[in-house]
Length: 188
Image 1: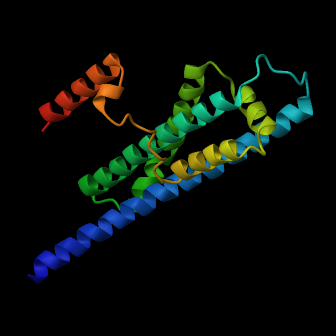
Image 2 (image 1 turned 90 degrees about the vertical axis):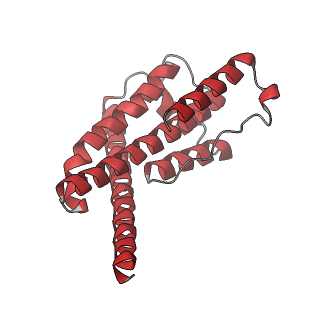
Image 3 (image 1 turned 30 degrees about the vertical axis):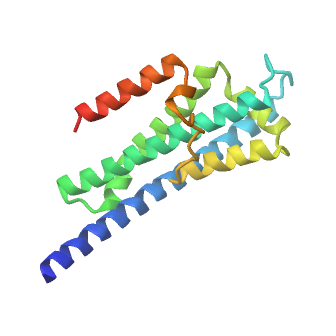
């Protein structure tokens, strides 16, 4: 009985340490990324070329990109948490050492994720920055930025609204949902 309780306590402790390590990774990434952005911004100011970038980014598109970035960043953090925990379990290396070893790969992966989302929308970092500055007082944009920061710190972003019933979805969406359910059932 006490052996089972100790095992459960040990598992709970490992899970908490894994979550703490992942939150640390997310926080470190946010700090590193914000520092890099500040340095790039200062460099651009010192070089100060033309003020207009090709093509303005609308507030709606900015919010969409920030939302997709939040979801992608959170997914990466969850994957990294699992990798840290798995490495710890497989090797017995302390969690903090596992975090250190995976830190550089995590930072590179996070940058790649954010870059890919921007690329999917055909926008540059300069366009994103200009749109954020132009909409810095907008509550919706601020909420989207907060969601992104929180996602990068390990908090799940809110789920997008779903159709109430399958009949309200488009035929393509219904087919996609059926295929996803079939795949999930096939993996069990």
